[in-house]
Length: 95
Image 1 (tube, rainbow, N blue to C red):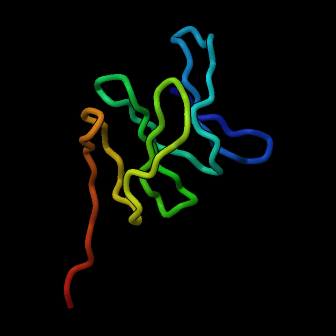
Image 2 (image 1 turned 45 degrees about the horizontal axis):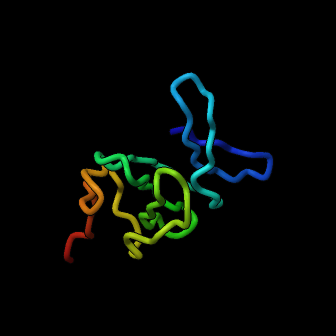
């Protein structure tokens, strides 16, 4: 996976072969970050920075992105499979 910043300052995620050939754009948001492939190779998970770091997913061959979490961040640490994610979050200490 590669992140690409284009001339309009949009950050999108592309899938490419290890030699850089066969580039395919997978996301088209304003600031898509932290790409992680599911271990079964079916999905790309990422965070949409412009939408409160919500976690999104898109099929590895491209398609329509889906919202996985509609809450602000947790940090995406890894995609274990097509249904399980490894995340980290925080909550403020009670007063």
